[in-house]
Length: 191
Image 1 (cartoon, rainbow, N blue to C red):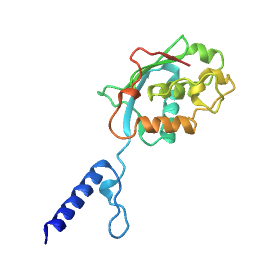
Image 2 (image 1 turned 90 degrees about the vertical axis):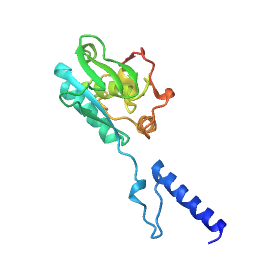
Image 3 (image 1 turned 180 degrees about the vertical axis):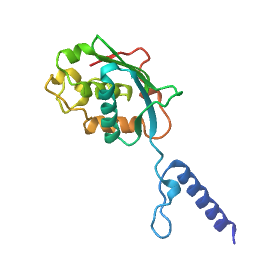
Image 4 (image 1 turned 90 degrees about the horizontal axis):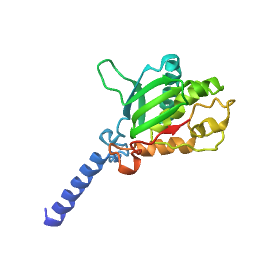
């Protein structure tokens, strides 16, 4: 074998190794994708709703709405003995979220909005959206989860729209969290 053939073979092996390590699917000679290039598993973000009082079921349903809508991140209840990424509590104020970084923070399920007629599951899903890196979109239509209370009390939509889904998918794609995706430490988003 001459040195050119050896160089080409070495380069091909290195390129294939880099592609497998990057999560890119590489087709084999038979045209089938190699399993080693399959997509990485979703990032799991845990939540603790033990302090959410009467809103505990709404939080579970809000998390389920996100889990049905996106693939790159999944919201799961925290296991005993683990530290949760998201702490959810109930209070008498207005619903709000304080992200500390992407996928981490605190949510307050405020009774004030519920007393005015806003849907509890929509509130939970909206506030979890802030923890997943989404800003408020106000005023906005009911089809926009992040429009929050501006959509009115008749709005019960608990699911993110296509743009909101795509934004969360981008933020949680891969294993790296970039500085532009990290929410300001002291930002408080209100429903």
